[in-house]
Length: 215
Image 1: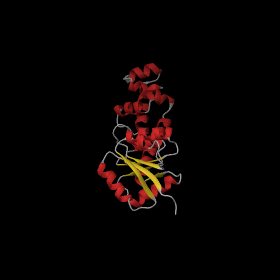
Image 2: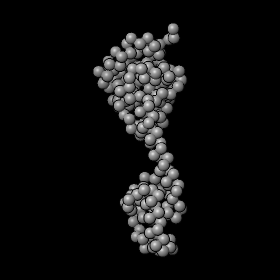
Image 3: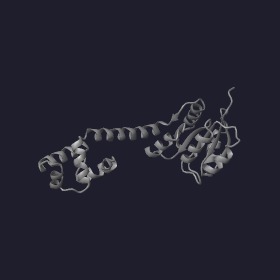
Image 4: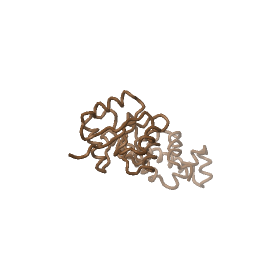
C-alpha cells in the first residue's frame, strides 16, 4: 500500500476546515496532518512538519494565499501548493500561476476531483479544475486578441491615436503631421473599426489600456 499524501489545510473559516477534514477522514490515500486559520500559522506549522501539499484559500488573514505560495516556493521548494478557493476570476488565477502554484480548484469541487487533484500534484503534475482552466483561457485569448489588434494599427494610426488622447483637434493633428484633415478622419474611422470602438472616448480608453501613450 502506498504511503498517504500528507497535507495541511488552511482556511479562515473553521466550519469549512472541519468539513474538509470530515470529507477526507475515511480516505486512506490522504492524511490531514494539520489545519491553520491564517497564513502565519501555516508558515509556523510547515517548518518542521513532514508534508507533501499545502491546501490553502486565497483570502486569508495576516498572509494571503498568494503571498503564502510565494513564501513556500522560496523557502520550501519541495512542498506543493493547491489553491482551494471561491475565486474564479482570471486575474486571480493568473497571479497564482505566476507564483507557480501546483493546482487550483473551486470550493464547490466534488470529493472525487479533490482527490484527483491531490494525487496528480503529489505525483509531480499540475492540476487545474475545468472551470478554472476555462476562465483563465478566456483571459489569455482576450489578451492575445488585444495584442493582435494593437499590432494591426499602423505606425501612422498609433501616432494619430496618441494625439487624439492628448486632446488635439483634427486640424491640430493634421497641422502637426503635415497631412489633411480628411486623412486624419480616415485614419480615425479605420481605427474605430479595427479595435471595435464606438467613439473617440473608446479610442482614448484603448490607447491608455494598451500603453500606447508611453510609446
